[in-house]
Length: 161
Image 1 (tube, rainbow, N blue to C red):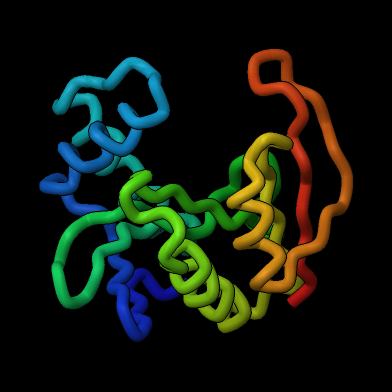
Image 2: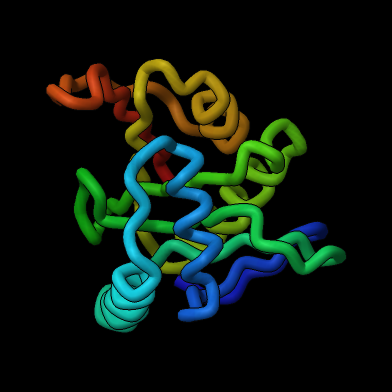
């Protein structure tokens, strides 16, 4: 997968250590305990290492004109496999409702197709209506559900490439 993608409004790139404060802030919006800055830097370095090994990664999303970090999007193993990875994305609440997630996910989908993969997955909490809309716009269909004690119903979505 290409680790640098461009769309009309967005730049998607590999994580840098300097992105640590932004990822901490984004995770903070979820209401979870924030990791330390050092721990976050370490996680970014580990993600960069795995990207080289696996050929897939989450990428930062920045608005092209403003240059500001608004979230991430990319491919992960997650609950799936390297051969059929998951697409994942998360944006600051202030960036919701502007089509950025769909635009970024479309670019990542094209990058996944270019790798020769045949299928992608996306697992989404049943409550996350906005994510279902993004997935529907880029051609994903609901496949099945599973249950996780802490997260509740998880809906598996699939897209044949």
